[in-house]
Amino acid sequence: MADDSDLDRPLVVNDVGVSKQSSDSFAITAALIAALGAFNFGITLAYTSPSLLPMEVSDKSGVFNSDMSAEESGGTVTISTENGALFSSILNIGAMLGSVLGGIINNKIGRKWTLLTVAVPFAASWFWMALSEDVLNITLGRFFTGVCSGTFTVTVPIYIAEISPVAIRGTLGALTQLMVTFGIFMTAVLGLVFETKQKTTLKCGGGEFSWDDEYDGDITSCQDIVSDWTCTVSEDGDSTTLGVCEGDMSSWRNLAYAGAVGCAALFILMLGMPESPAFLHANGHLDAARKALQRLRGAGADVEGELVALANAGAENEDVDEFNMSDKEAGEKKPLLTALWESRKAVMIGFTLMIGQQLAGINAVMFYCSSILSMAGMSNQNLGTVIVFAVQFVMTGVACMLMDRLGRKMLMIISTSGMTVFCLTLSFFFFNDKEPSALALISLIGYIAFFSLGFGPVPYLVMSELFPLEVRETGCSIAMLTNWMGAFMVTECFASLVLAISAQGAFLLFAVICALSLAFVVFIMPETKGKSLEQIQDELHGRTHVPLRTSMSA
Image 1 (cartoon, rainbow, N blue to C red):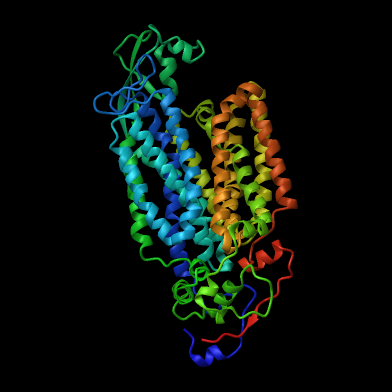
Image 2: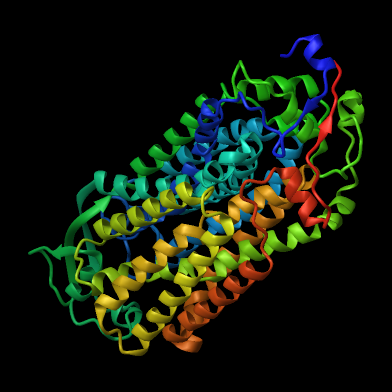
């Protein structure tokens, strides 16, 4: 805190409103801890990758019976093909609900307490899944992990944006996607760690159900089925009627417990972190906002300048002295619909980036990941998946380092350009009778690398930067709802799309969407690198930004 003589003197606030004596270390720590929410979301997103197979086929933790229905075997859960598809997709439905709730809860109790409050049912949902003994309970547990994930995807970017110094806001903002990819990567690694030899009994044909029907008549022996699961046929059983196979499959219960541990870590560590100063100030808690900023910038930092910029963020450049307003006056807000209409440009940009991220085909590429790895000669697809996720994590880390150097716009231009090229090469691969396999592998890795460089992290970051404080929770909630709707649409419709226009046609369509996204970035998306949240609002509303100069009194 400055003394009275300091407060009586005029203070020239620099263009970004940050004092020169500030330290970034605690803000970085707080951002990393909050990003554990994104890490937990990444675990949730990737959970089915190592878990769904043992749920479906393991004699120990799941069995396919002849009529493809769900049954309980040996006190474990059995998931049929239809239930497995529902188990995978219900995450998106839960996340849509969670993204709406996220905006409401953030507005009521703040960013910190939203993370703390939601971490508890998040962990409980993982325990619910781990202890489930039937399909209904495990599916409900999955649904509620989706709800909590949706809430986290709204909260984490907002919190990080509001606590970050302007100079490193891009780097810290990209932590959201980096930790998502780290969660995905660690899930794949834990899938390998928790692997055990498990047996599965498969009925290849006969009765009312036939694997020949399920696999378009291509089945001649059980080896044709289990080869896709990287297990070997045991000596037991008749290979033409009943195959008893043994292969490496992960323990989905242990993975669920690991998810609960991640939520517990977030809860414990977040208890020691401050609330967002922007939220506190917007709700009239000026002294609490000052104290939170002091913790984030360091004991020796002069935070009054940043508080001035915060007070004037999104306002007209007038000679107003908001530090002389009462707490009640500082907390007053415009009607929500009025504020949203005034922020319609930010809503349009956020909506377009989020829907574009999903319609650009990332889920479709991941859908073909296993088959592409298999065609490239990689027998252990779990190991191959780890490699793919490692590429995603590393390239997102590169994006973090470049975010405040090259800027958001340049990274998006590079990203969408590369994605367009690799969607075209994937389209050619399927057009050319899936030859050469090396082209598919290069295209897969290339697409994921370029996606992770820009289209993965940038929309989350820009979303949290574009909306003014008064509608930030609602705006980010709308953007994330759009994102989850796009994910659900692509996941549910991709197989039908391939049937309608073929795989080459589908990836050609994704290439067109990537090219349109490139044009949108070049001509419409603003650059936010190195700009205060106030300056961004001035530019969005066509106002000339003038560095604030004001005097403050105690």
